[in-house]
Length: 200
Image (cartoon, rainbow, N blue to C red):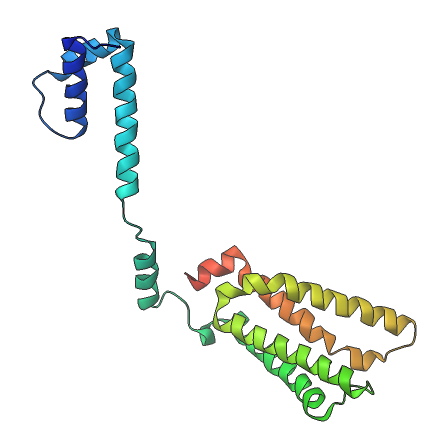
C-alpha cells in the first residue's frame, strides 16, 4: 500500500515520539489522525509493542547480584539458632551411630554380613543427607520425598514383621529416627519456616 505524505509524516512522528525525540507534528494532531486512520493506528500500536519488548530484553538480570548481596549480609540464620536444624543434626549423629557397627563389623541383628553392610551404607547416607539439609536448608526440599518414602516403608514393614513374629519391637524402634528426620525435613521446607530462616 502506498502511503500518502500525511500518513508517512504521522508514522515518522510516532516513531520519533517512542524514541523520545521531538516531533514537528503536535501530539493532538497525531492522535486525531490515528483516530481516523486504522492503518496508522495499527502501525503505532505495533511500534509501541516492539519498543516495550526491546526495553524488557535490554534489562540486565539482577537476580545473581541480589542473591549474592543477601548472602553477604547474613541472610540465612546461623544453624545453632534454629532448633529444627539442630534437631536434624542430632538425628543425623544418631543415624551415624547406627551405621558404624554395620559398616565396620558387619553386625545388624543377626543379618548376613553383606546385608548388614548394605544397611550400614543406607544409615550412613541418611546421616550425611540430614547433615547436609541442616547445613543448607533449601536443599531439604529435594530430600523430603526420598526420606518420607523410606521412613514410611520401614515403619510399614516393621509393623508387618512384628505382627508376623519376624522382628522384636525394641530393635525396630531405631526406625523412628528416619521418621523423626522426615518430620524435621517437612518442617524445614514449610514456607513459613523458610521465611523465618530468610533462606535465599
